[in-house]
Length: 99
Image 1 (tube, rainbow, N blue to C red):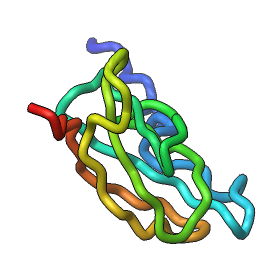
Image 2 (cartoon, one colour):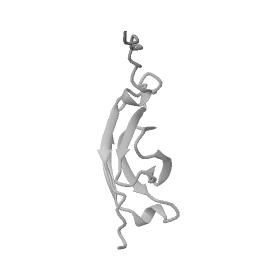
Image 3 (cartoon, rainbow, N blue to C red):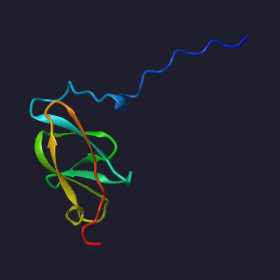
């Protein structure tokens, strides 16, 4: 007879980011980008990679995606209202502004 199938694995943690670790001034920002090697910048500061939740301060934030070694200011950005205690998802670039 056929071997019994193992129970299904739980979904990976990326499916449901842990919001409990956030303070009242933080939110998670998940940026989907056309380039998987792009980096996410908020207010000009590097916060992490695209394609994953990154912990940032909530409120209206200037968000950019950039690919090293090109300086971040050469890439277009977007003002994003990051919700406190929640996951905010956006699609962004990276799009160079000098091409």
